[in-house]
Amino acid sequence: MKEKWHLNLPNALTLLRIFIVPLLVAVLLTQPKDWLGVPQHIFGVAIFLIAATTDWLDGYLARRRGQVSSLGVMLDPIADKLLVSAAFIALVNNQLAPAWAVVVIIGREFAVSGLRNVAAIEGVVIRASRMGKFKMLVQVITIALLITSMHHGGPPVTPYALPVYWKPPAFWNVLKHFSATHHLSGLDVKILLYSAGRAMMWLVVVSSMWSMYGYFRSFYSSARRGVPGRRPVSRPIPDEEEHNVVYSVESSR
Image (tube, rainbow, N blue to C red):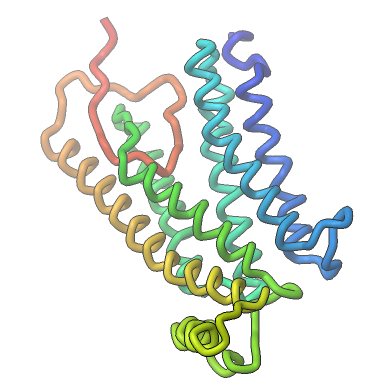
């Protein structure tokens, strides 16, 4: 039992990701433009990418070193949800992400987590899917683009993009300006990054809903088939957002 809860290197990286979340929120929501001499948006995106990298690194090290533990299985999905949710909420506060999309994304996590708890009681195990991994990758790219586009704690604005800076016309206004002047200012680059991030938000929402649909469909199919001798699972089930493949656990021999 002690070995299962041992604080090894993979688990330490997972905990580091959790502890980075308050720092990330502080960087994105406080007024100072510079942190340790580094611009707010650069420091923020660096912190976020470091935290996102630990998500891949802790799993890789746990498998390579044979250090998969109950503590890691429990903490890893919690750390992922905290990081992504905190980043999206901070972006909404800075008017960099639409609130409705963030509500859908976070609401999806609650819905899937709730159904996963039901699956655990029914003795059903959920395995990772490619769509879930793709969704996580898209989320990381989207958040990184939007943080990088931050200007003085909010969206980038230029005189010729001011009326609709957050909509597609701003993107075309920047391109027209570039075609006429053959020059892109720092704000122009941020608008292009911001436009790309806002476009990627649609992909995040679609991939989130699609992976949730696959999860519910697979669980429902398994529940309808039913498996004799199925029993509740006695060990923790990975509560990761990338799961939608379902199978039943046979009764112990």
